Length: 132
Image 1 (cartoon, rainbow, N blue to C red):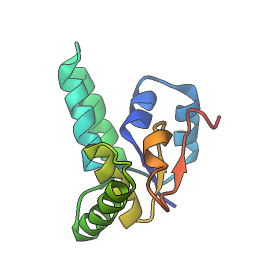
Image 2 (cartoon, rainbow, N blue to C red; image 1 turned 180 degrees about the horizontal axis):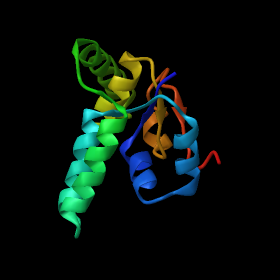
Image 3 (cartoon, rainbow, N blue to C red; image 1 turned 90 degrees about the vertical axis):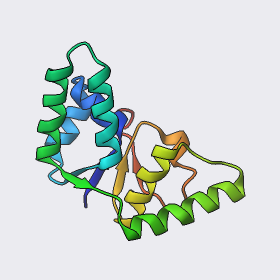
Image 4 (cartoon, rainbow, N blue to C red; image 1 turned 120 degrees about the vertical axis):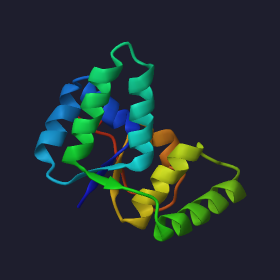
């Protein structure tokens, strides 16, 4: 099982959240989406310590599997977005892509943002910040 960590979980890790640190140390197969990686780079570039934070993001990216958008992800995106729009419960565009990556690759999505992601039928979720 690969655990796909959402942006907020990676931020908790980078900030030294003990519960998240412990779970990461116990979990051999971790992933990040290119979407979350972009969000982390954006945050680093807005920070007071741009170079140091970009280096931390680069190091993180070199140690985990990076999942990008491919044809299967695009199919999952279309299905999820149409389903959520029919229900009148859309989610943010980046979260929609992250959910699509997780579904297309049969990954466990680790996020603190349960409220948004529970709207996606069949998406497997964990929250390492609250579950501890």
